[in-house]
Length: 562
Image 1 (tube, rainbow, N blue to C red):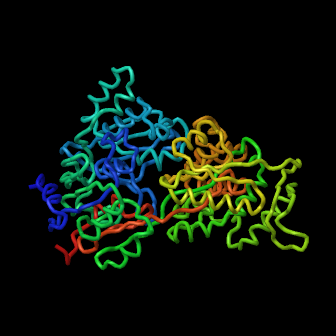
Image 2: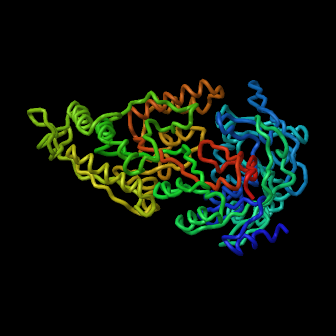
Image 3: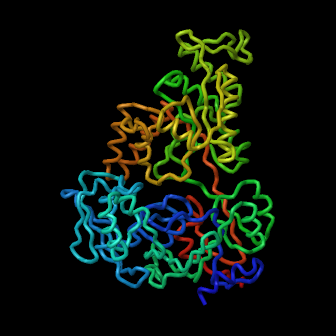
């Protein structure tokens, strides 16, 4: 019967579907079910229901809580070691989860230098497995991301992967062989397993009868899963997907909905719209390696001229928030609101006057200044650098509008605000890959508007973005920012195992970045999602939306539904 469900689902979009089947719309085909290769959003959505980690985050507090682990890790400062006890759990094939699986996962990551994962495992010196349910990690040196990133990596089954790993190590290109391995039936510990994947059409997940959380109370929540089947339908466009949601052909649209659809969806009594904060950063970056943005005063003036409220209100249509810091507001533990608030709450006239004051003190002049002899605002012309030379034309690179209209339009508006000050700014959209090549690889740019759509809740990325060691071709320090004081704080934050000490250090790092402005945070878009409320209930709201492990473990058929 289980295999018939996908066929019944697609026989007629208007047909009634069993109450134990959750129907989800996703944007694109998953690129892979190989956990080591999966980096695209849709692959990771599927695999998040199959592979699990030792620890995960509480949906309300965002604190780390035991998941495959039984309790918090035990720390031995003298040995720089952490001991983790596993809770009783089975793989989806019915075999037992043991410490050998955890040790094997670490072995694969370190042996192959698996991209995206190796940076959070490299500092693990060795792993011991004193018994089947105990794992002991020894670190080379203190590293705070061990608790927040290393222990949240997905664990794989040694039995499924050891033969694949052995064959890969015999090849000339072991990593490429590992990543290219086609995995058709991933074995995991999550609430669901893959039943069928009909490429180009749908994926069918069914409940994992061996899921370790079934019937347990974890962190005060009773876990299922209570839904027997999940059908994930692939849609090519938002228009078709939204129509399917309205018609009742799907129950959940698992990707961000554009604001233009909101009014129509809110009118439908059978649809509920969720508005969630994102762990994201959309920003303007500057090239500090050369004039004109080598000058901190100029960067501060640019920050003062940008109207972030306009971007949120007009470009994002109100579905977003102004970003004050380089850590998102939703990351409550580390967020620092006490940073310089360039232009915050100011009118256009006030921003121009404030920017003019900054630049005048730094020695900039104009053929026609933005403020005349009577104190009135006029169209500025001929801005000159402190050495008297005319400011040369500079370019603000943005993605094209068909890739991200928000960033493209923001670049155009920033161009106009800077021209009010007499700056010869020119916004230039370009293909995303070419943009990254110029900014990250060649460092051939003046300024740019980019974004990180899903940042880790551990803000160690601040070290990557702004530490001087990252100022190299293809390094993450794209602006070329160098500050010895910042580097010292960033290194200390990575080594700080005490969360409160680390929190203070990271807040100081945010203050320094906003004073020096290698990046200027612009906005954080709201994640908009919609569900049918006449079919299932129990969606769990948290940072990054309702498509999380807690929702899929707690959802139940609506009592008044089918």
